[in-house]
Image 1 (cartoon, helix red, strand yellow):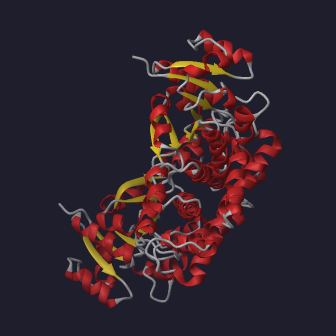
Image 2 (cartoon, one colour):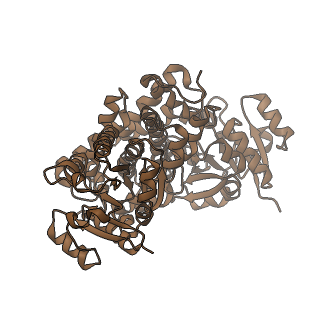
Image 3 (cartoon, rainbow over the protein chains, first blue to last red):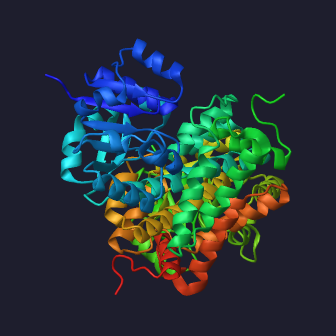
Length: 299
Length: 299
């Protein structure tokens, strides 16, 4: 019994992992990307053949895994946009972090073509994407959930069904990113502050992870600083982008977000000083540079 | 077999809970406070009789549980200071959140009188104090730890022994408070931001506590906002004090702490607008007021 047929658009760090999870769950999975090598690798790993035009009528859902709102719009409605090629009733599962208003706009344009739309940003990073254990923060119609559910469950450990209003998923994602973006930078601020007082990173992690000061972000990213390992599991450049989205939404709502704003400045300093493609734990290097201290792994 | 004899100075919200835990663990426990009613209540609950002068020779340790450095210094070396009345070898266990430099000064002055000193700030709040399940972040000599250990273990679930240098405990406490003070305010910022986007507090807690945006502080304080319950388990006014200590230490170290500084402004706004004695989750009211939104429990 088939789990259904899906196409995934975007085979980058997140998308290729999610595509693999779809395959393992038994879905017929087509993978598309502007990078022909990525497509060839995915087909070698079990991805289904055929152009979008050839397979469009077979698709239950298309999963769009790109970097931002502009790329999402381009995939759907750009010069080679896919929305006009899909069969009525196909569900567009949009996974990028985008403003809620943008999600509502995309959903309306998809509805005009007879397509369903799930506002479905994901959380969890590349490792959990590859494991099929993401969290998905999704909102949309019951019909959209019903048809996309096999794909959602293949990609995620937890699917939060946040109601039938498109935008609710993106709102919750913005809230989550606000907190993660603050918490990673706060971990870096506290760890380097501790170093000025003789608290070494390994002792910091051992103690604080068991005290009231802990956070998921601290336990996830702190070890990268302790080990001097900035292999980009999640890159610095995600945060100027995502906290920028959060601040844009906040400005529209006339909501003052001073802690988010302070954290964003640290992320901009990290990116501006050339750390954009390093792991986001590298925001600690901004603090270390400013305080004249040497992090683990530094010369 | 006795667990030893201790005196606790300060029978406020934290100290009375810790005194009860000492009693339950079988230690002979004397309780002292400027508030005679608090002393009487503690004696009725099993606290030992006698003036400090009468019992000083029997004490293994004195536990000083007051609000800040000034009160700690007053208890030890003020007009009625206890340090000069204690027998040589008695351990002073100093539990307030203080600057590391202050702890080193107190230790030196105690050493000049032949007293041992443990720099031993506590973490966990009044409920865990009453349960005897605090975390204690302690540093001092092996002799001090040996003699104070029964008392420490009675009061704490976890005693972090951070080496023999007085000040290490206070440094780690400052690091912890920096993070908790940021995380509570960030929880409030994110929860109220979410409300402007249609994310209700109960949904916020249900989802974010299972996502990357979670923190100990969010899971501890978020429910207070959701329930509109600001019974002061830990008061707003702790944070202008503790983050003030953190910023003073940071300034001395020429360490820029922009996220801590932004969080401190929110705590000052909370205290300045009359919320100082409410539960620290009430920092959410600053955000709600500024954004024109209504929190649960508001009229």
